[in-house]
Image (cartoon, rainbow, N blue to C red; front, side, top):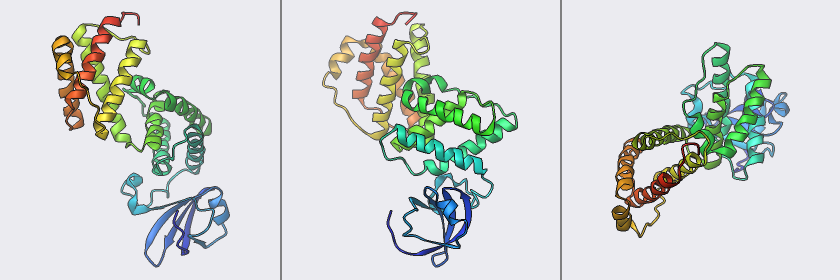
Length: 288
């Protein structure tokens, strides 16, 4: 982080690792993050921006997760901040990638709302839990650990559906893909699987090899489409002619993808999907 050697007035110690501060010269409010920073700042009136304990610094106006509320942290439960910090440490230990800094803000906001819903007997249901488990298995395992940490911290019986939502935040932190996009992608994966099942009057067993392979293929196809990572398929015309039935289904799936993503789906991807459908229909067994 750039060290500019300016003084910030400490406005509030949110937790042991989080401090709210203000640059009175610029009139800018910041959230400062750093191990033990909040504990050290309890008896201070000012912090220097060059303080080595400051690991991350956010301007409030920069953040999408502020819920349009300048006092985002004012009502934040200290236990939420503590468990969020421990979960983020767990994520950092589990994935080598540099985490998206928004996780420091999005995760406590999400956990606070989850705790509120459980305490007020508002049901938590995740309609995309199965797709999430299959597509993001490593993130889901970390999410299960995070869920248990939240349960123990608040003494609440939180359903496993919540692990699916935590998975989105974990994957978003690791890949820098917005959570909203991941939710949309999970919904789309479910729709595409349903199209295949209805087309061939078949049902995938949850967690079966056929379903896992399908979900993984579709997941990476969608990611390539969204990221604009084009892959060349030199056998397009051959695939259209050789696998006409599968190509027709893949073309209908393309229309659904384009409608949901509001993006064009390259013909190369349609033909790769056609080949996957061809193999799927010839190897799938009702029990697999």
